[in-house]
Length: 339
Image 1: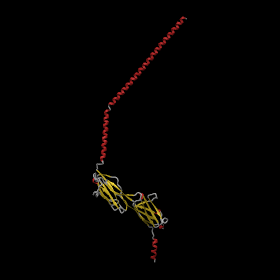
Image 2: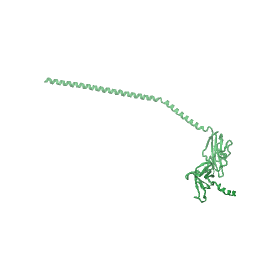
Image 3: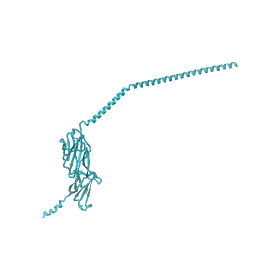
Image 4: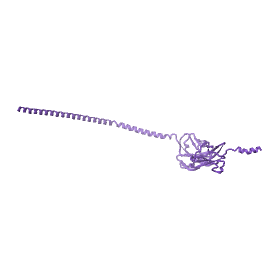
């Protein structure tokens, strides 16, 4: 009898908080055709305007501050409706079926849609958690720029993906490129034995060249797939000789040397033709000084002549005055005699 009583009361006593994921999301992707050195391939790209919603059910009424989120193990803080990630809670006020329960909707939009695991942890008197996921086909990076390296350099090629679930393996293919092999009819071959595959995030997702050779010049094709789809990307490795990088520098040095030589020859020519010019300048200066001296002499002569004329005029005037005075005296004397 006691056992039956305990059995009836135990479900009521042991009732605990429960969180359950009821809807997952999917990141939308589309394919586009690309070309690299005559090699055509299709590649996945993410839809930047995609939206996704994750739904969870909690078996009791809760508030927003009771919910904590992580994305792929990293803390995630939802924002407002204007943000790319935000959360809403719904209860019986929205749907009758939610009586005594709470539905949690996590809205993801635009760049906020990230493939992976979203962990919702609800804490009230107890704590419970559930995991929702955003599924996506693998998306590999697009290498639009040529990777230029020098012979015997160490080179690492990485093929990191975005997607969920994770791909089980990454495969590589090699397409040799030479000056006369760019007609677009290229065939892939296994990568060279001296390449060391590395596993950073997924098996064989990285290639390591200890010393790259001229024969390694070409396209490296990375392929991966998961349960949702597959993707391909291409890396063009352009290997140049060790001395190739010096040729532009040598060309610049030669140009500078030629320019400096030309300037020196010109200056030397100018130096040889300059001695005749100072004599001309001195002669001109001598002539100018002679002219100035002659002008001064003429001026002195003119001044002296003027002074002589003035003196002569003065003497003449004095003679006239004496004659006039003598005549006057003679006239007075005659008048006195007559009287």
